[in-house]
Length: 114
Length: 113
Image (cartoon, rainbow over all chains, first blue to last red; front, side, top):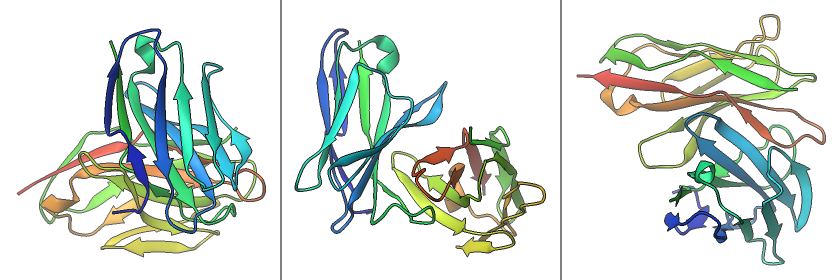
């Protein structure tokens, strides 16, 4: 158990809908990262927050947004869903932001868009 | 931009065989390098890491050496077990203000008894 909790584990929704994925980081970790894992793209970095502020942005679509709350949990919002958004979404957390800081991953949320 | 290239799988070995999974990287600075492992149905777990040139990361019998001259970080294990069957990801992370982990596409390893 990495200590990073993601809910829900599975989500099935229709095209055009909006969903929210939730992540609780390890106790004491200030940094949260979101990744998308799909068969064709592999693991793609989406966005990172540190202590409530956005710090880095990757290949995140405009239809997607995220935030980190004062209690440090994070939510990833996906809207106007398309079939191609079906993927495994991982959250990771780390204590700090240095390059050699270890990131701990949750078990992921599997999103299926039908 | 940063990128990681690792050998395509799947790799199938017999128990006690020697394992090598190749990984090379492209980065503008001096990244830290990582190997992560993903067991079926689970998230990624850090297997080992190296933060500077010539460092050797090791864990659970796996080793990888940070080779700056060849921009490589190959994963090796002398004798694999069935329980090592998983997907292995090579990743890099730049220091400074670039916080993201950049992953390779992953290599599926299956070890048969």
